View (cartoon, rainbow over the protein chains, first blue to last red):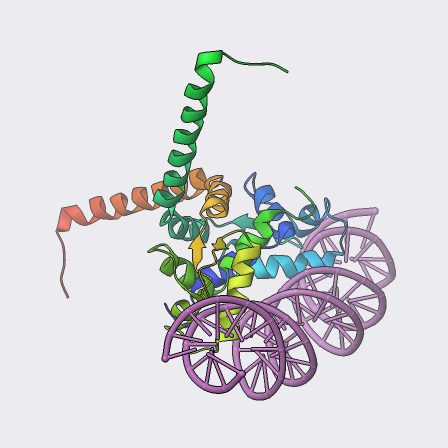
Length: 118
Length: 118
DNA sequence: AGGTTAATTAACCGGAAGGTTTCATGGCCG
DNA sequence: CGGCCATGAAACCTTCCGGTTAATTAACCT
């Protein structure tokens, strides 16, 4: 529990749908700021700010090619976030197990009469 | 991509270290608000607010037992968040593969002279 | 009834987030 | 050189966030 846990920045960055969409886009390869902004109904500086947030969270790095600054996805923080969530895997699997059991009970209750279609 | 993607609320809730700690605590079993507040140097209403954020994100549900309102962890949204992150698993595994390759290269370069200790 | 305990509500505050517009920089190209 | 093009920076506004204190509800226990 460091003073500034990197998970803070990672999850905060992921909490915005625009930024998540940008990451999805970047998983298909590098892109310039303008190209990233194109799908959104939003000014260019707004996208630039989103990219800065992603950059400070370590989710994106940028190259320098002439007047373009291509953005590249960095998956490290995503992996750490995923690892944190993995802590609860047993939890939701238990939940699914219970649901499965429940569904199986329903099924065996239906069996005697067969399926009924209204 | 709904107007209000539940991932927004989930990731936003997870971006606060106090809330993450609360979730960790709840993974060990139900707890009252006061019990949850105890480890933190923070007023009770502050914790109450955090719990409301977690509740609205569907990460926590609450029972009613006399004057206590025990909180229970709900792992569903965590699973969805994890699923979203899983989209990038190939990405970071590729990164690790490259690191592994790099380390192996370093190792084979060291081999001829053997390890040197300054 | 009266008091204690658990928890929420309300009002407030400082600061950060997310957006805008405007201006500045820096590299290509005609 | 002159100008366009891609991007970053600054100033500003509004809303949300995380915290506080003080007051309120609700349930238990004499």
